[in-house]
Length: 243
Length: 243
Image (cartoon, rainbow over the protein chains, first blue to last red):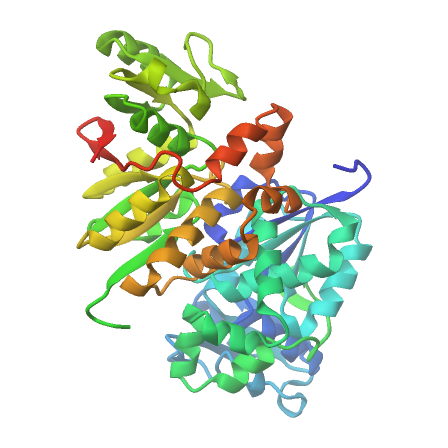
């Protein structure tokens, strides 16, 4: 272990977060399919901010209070009472510019609030569409790094682990990584190779299958591609804004 | 999903066990370095049974009550008050035959009792030294399969995941596997290839490093090798015996 390097940990499920001290870490919330991909896309396309909330009722309440777009899905459909869903393609510049998006997601929002409750000094969101912005920020920060996979109802998933591995493969020379979960993630990233969509298909990733049943191949392909919306969403007060 | 196939799940940490229903599953306790490797070795070498207990005081108490060998380590050394450690090489036939081994381990024992508390109808232990016996049993059983990694203080580890992957690679044709953790495990197994010791070294697996500091290379090499003690430890009443 080199004393002058910062530490990096990967946490494969929100249910494992209490095993780590995150009070000196940049926490990266990873919810590749599709919350964090959609968040960075909305911000890249000019949304003023994205407010992540945990429930549909909060989404409606807050959406009215701030005059924002209310969005979120439950079981693959736009939730009752909300106007839009969880697809990045619903938020082109022509629609989202200068607007506030109030977004309810289950896994990603939960993890974000867990991280804040546990004293994370900085929370950003990561996804393939903004991977370069994320990696540059982590390299230039003076904090440790905590890659937090939102997973699926606490079950480890392939796509969030894959993204953690992609980040690690880019930034590992800057960090001490005494963390087997990080090694697993890097491993998956290497195995996946260039064609991540084919990898998810071949490996029968559970959420890949779920989204394909809703004909969301286009979403999956976009969410697995680098730098389509390369900005850095950072949590300030109660919302995500571009750093 | 083929309706006539049984289900297989992999759980990468005891902290995730409550996400799964294990009431119709054979639970495989996996604690590769070194608890489950040592258990199968002691039984292969003729121990009557191995009684896994959670604390040193219980180990001493029960060891006296049954006239057994008391064994276990804390922080890499034989625990105060116990006679032997956690290395498979401490239990040759000349020493262990016809004896009862009372063994205290932290991660493996905890997971075993968690599985029993949650209604697992059958609990066996798995390790590379008995991988063939494990796989044959799982194929011939009529139950679902739950591969439970003991991990390291709830943190996911490379070696238990590697073993889960090795099992999956052998038996997957017999099961429905709708479980991303299983795909991760299989991935790691493929990546590791023939020389598992080198893989653990190259990936700087945390527990590999811990044991190497105690000069336990021989233990690691044995615990990563197939079928050195190929019997099937199964939990009956309060102890592990050969099926």
